[in-house]
Every structure is written in C-alpha cells, then in structure tokens.
Image 1 (spheres, rainbow, N blue to C red):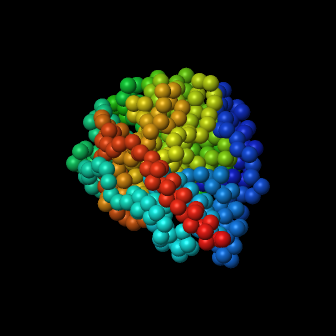
Image 2: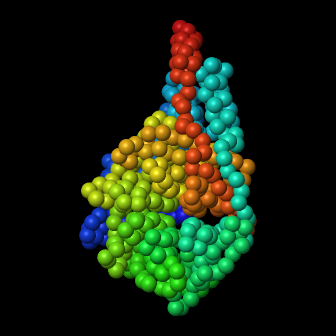
Image 3: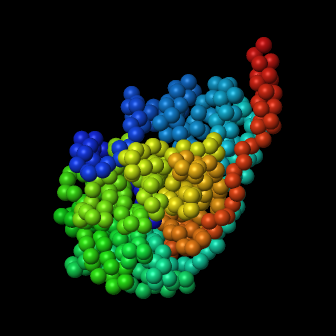
Length: 460
C-alpha cells in the first residue's frame, strides 16, 4: 500500500469535517483528546529555544507535554533524557532510556554530550548497550527483484492472485503494471479520457468479487495535470478479469485538500479508502454508489495506510505520528490501539491484517523495521510484539507492501531520498522473528539502586 505522507489544511477543517461526517449514514468518530493550551508547533519551537539557551527545566517541561500528546516520537524522549541528565535527575533519565530500550529503539545516547553526567553507571551501560545493538541488522528479508520504476513514481502495489502477478500503480503517467516474479512488466491500464484516471496512489484486488479498485488523484506529478484539476480524485472500480470500468466515485467538491491513498476491502465487497491530505476515512458500501465520509478528525495527523478484517469487524488505520486507530464499524466506536511496554507505533508507513496479527512497516523510526503485532482475543489491543526484519542492509525507508501467501512483499527503498533509484522488492515470512522480551529488570533495578545511592552520597 502506498506510504506517501501528506498533511491536511487544518484551518477550518473542524467545521467542514464535522459537517461531512454528520451526513454519513454510519460514522465512527475518532476519540477526542483534551485540547492542549499550546500547539505541537508552539511546544516544539519553545523546546528548540530552551535547548539553545540551555534552559533544562523548560526543555524538560516542554518535551514532557509533547511526549504526552505524541508518546511514540523518539526525539521527545531523547530531549527528556538530555534535560534530566543536565538537571542531575538520573532516575528520570534512566526511566526514559528504559522505555526507549523496551520499545526496541536504536539511538546512541553517547552522541549527545549532555548525557555525560549519567554515563559510566551500570544502569546506563546496560541500556545503552541494548539500544546500540537494536540498530544492528537482524531478522529475515530476501530480495526478489529490481523493478524498472523510480522510487518517486511508485503509487502502490497489490498481489493479484487471479493473474499470479503483482499489480503496481505509477504516479507520473497513471499506469497499472502487472509484474511477474522476475520483475518483468506488462501494462494493464493507462490513464486516458475514457477511464478518467490520473496518478494511481492506491490499489486493491478483490479476487473473490472479481473487482479491481484504484484510488486516483490529479496531482502535479501526473503528466496530464492542469491547475483546474487540483484536488480532484476518486475511487475507480474495474472488472478484475476484463479491466472494463464499472464505476467511478468522486471526492466531494469542497475547499479542502484531498489525496486518496491506500484501500482496504472486506470479503463482502465493502471498500475503505483513506484521504491523506485531509484526515478522513471514506467508505464505499456495496449497495451505495458514492463515497461516504466514515471517520476522521483534525486530531489525526498523517494517515498512511489502512487494513480491515475480512468480516469487517475491525478496521486499523495507520497514522505515522499517533500510531494505529482501531475502529469497530458495527458499534461505531474507535480508539487508539494500545499494548505492552514493548510497543512503539511511531513511523508506520504500512499496515496489513494477517490471521489475528497486524504486520506493520515502520520506516519513520530507528531502526527501520517490519514488525508483527499479535492481537488479543477480541482484536482490540496488542498482546505481543515481534520484530521480523530490522535495519537490513537493503532498507532505505521501506514503504508500499502487500501480502502474498505466507509473506509480506514490500519495496525496501520506497521512500529513499534518491528518487531516481529503481525499486527493490523484498519478502519477509509472516512467521519470522520472535516476541520481544522485556530486559532483565533485576539487573536494571540493582544498577538503578546503586546509581541512586551514589547520587545521594555525592549530595551529602
């Protein structure tokens, strides 16, 4: 699924989005958080100023507020550690080091001179060693082929079991390619006046109902783009066998930015598609001939991907900043996905549901990794976290991926800064890796006790 990050035009979004959702026949409202007194941008600016002025009290306070609102962002935790170390609050610094280590994050705190005061203790050495080791390559990931499509041109990928080939959408010319296991391509569709396509940013194959779904947008990257087409887009339905157009379901005409992306389809043919520019999840019900606003809200930040259980009992929407939004469409409720202390849901660019598990591609944190999340019995929270592939040599911002048989296939360099590179397809088995085990707390607690006693002696 496509992983391009876009941010919405949030001015006036609350009013327009609320009105849009209210008109939907069934809408799942995103849980509302208490409105902070300062925005994220204001807090980040204040944090930067505090760091420049070496005002550690303010740096600590600002980043604690940021961390409370966005708990998966590593930079805020690092800033808290820096501030706590500078204030000689070793216990606080070690607490956040432990939190980062438990979540499998790989950041070398020796790179920050402000941590010098908390080094050379057993607690620091123990956690620092584990955090550095987390950045070493591990897990399974095998290269399949190079694809003659530039990384910047990739819209999305899906597995087409009816053709036994991957289908790949491009953005510059709106082509849909069939790709075999050797990377050889064949053009199945191309944007033209007859089919109405623009850039292809989302693709889903519903083999059971013989349908091909494409999310397409009029973007400046599209060769036929004109300013008059800006913010136009829609969900396109094709017969999977003949590729004949069946339906086109356009976005509403309003003053908001739009960019349809990833698509998820249930076994009965219900379709969900995310709008990355304005954080809305749309639904195309089987018996309805239009897109309906289904869920969303200005508190969402950066929607990247969506997946759904075959029976339509759970929808999982990835937000690269906030984590995973879990929606129960039957009771019209939603909540952010939670789990154990080993869970970090930051930087997700891809999400798939596979047999009571979520498989996520995390390219926005260090290390970049593929992770399996075992859900609890009712599918409402994470029970176990298992990294499947982490910091592999070929990883350069992994992105669009798709399930095929018992593996996740994904483009390992989708988000590469080198937009002219050819795409590299890799595969990781769904059963790769093992559950993360918390660190030996006896070792940590004893080291922390010793550090605390030493600090108390120095103050006497």
